[in-house]
Length: 388
Image (cartoon, rainbow, N blue to C red):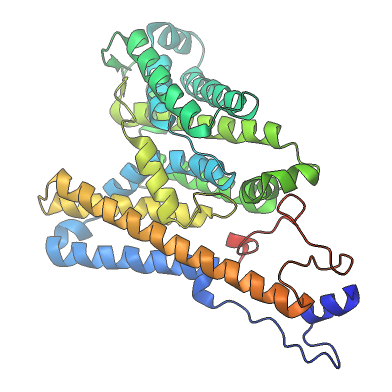
């Protein structure tokens, strides 16, 4: 039975069985198709911008503005992608960005940076974000608090702590006294803003970690079925903690990038970043229930939202209209996700029925043994996602 099952699933119909080979999903249902759809959506937005704003939209300075604005929220969205693929959610990212920027621009931190090296500012911002993510992870994984509640509490706490440290005042990092820092975070390389380069490096590193490392495979496994991942030997609680630490680190990097862009640290930085990041991740094709997602999709989602805002600004449309448009896009994206996910579930059931004669029989198991969610193999909806 096992050999017959493998033959029917991998190499086609077994002699005398009359079975047919499983039908492969279409191109548009895979990761390449989803990302192609996002590219088309971005191209349509650019076409609208060209038609409505003309040369102003096509100007090189405008393109660099879009990329610069996308960089900070893009870095945050990379960390959010890992958390959501792992089956969690992080509502505290905006507050952690603010806290990181404030702590990195305090008088004590600036004095230490002047006495030693400007890298102290960056290390401080990243460390603050990492500690915030660590607290989130420990409370969620070991305290058994729902991710929504735990990160909502961190949102309020981190924002309040940032206000206390800064006394609700904007802290300025003088460019003349910290030229080394602004040379990196406020400069450019061959005309490309350094912030854009940092975003690109974070995205590439995130893609490699997600698709080419054990950590990435475990992230998909934990998000797809945490209990099955535990039975497979993955330390789910510890991995969950690391996912939130990773999200916190990206918040710290974003905090340092905001300082470089605005020359300030403020408790108002990062306002509503959590919503923008979640929206970009969802638009990019990552399932909110976990188990599937792509870094490329997230990057395209960030660019779509940033370009949309730019088109609205160039046409003097209100921020309220922009918010309505974003809401409609998010709802449509979630509806499309549900449709694709339901189609993938039906395909798996049909494949199981064709290969084993029963949709609930585990391939390779003794005849008549019924599988459960706790012992089912850990499977990703679309295979290796971005590896395609």
